[in-house]
Length: 216
Image 1 (cartoon, rainbow, N blue to C red):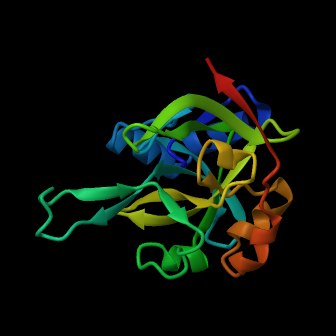
Image 2: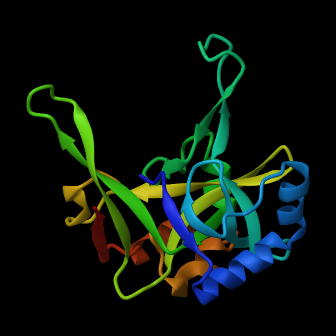
């Protein structure tokens, strides 16, 4: 987790985020230079473009178009040649120490709003010992139509990109997967993205009370 989530601009708040991000200078640049428009409605995958809440130049909350995934350069000895490796998640347990995430953890935090995220149930095959993916679930905080995923961002080649932070799952979610995204309440969005905030002080606000529905 997390490798899929769902954006729905028919939800008023998400629709407003979409309109602002798609008409922003960086949103227009993504669309015209890279031919990459924002996802307005539907399943979001790594490398897709979505509205993200992050601080502007004055440190105030704003909406930006961002692409999902940090590109990590691979060593020359890699059998993948000169290509980079896409990283879409970062663990909160190690984000403050890892070179790829340390600076973003300290100063560049963001919130990725969506309707819900997806997870696949992981089951170990008793015969082979291999982990297999089974049912697909929709998950979101209880009594909320919007899910706020906590993330980190940075600039790559002049474009903003983000990763989703993950943590240990709640007891209920641990039945389908060993990780879950960091879900923040709306009341803590401004604090989370403020460059001068201490993220460790905000982690106790994480939401673990969720609802999930299996897709047939």
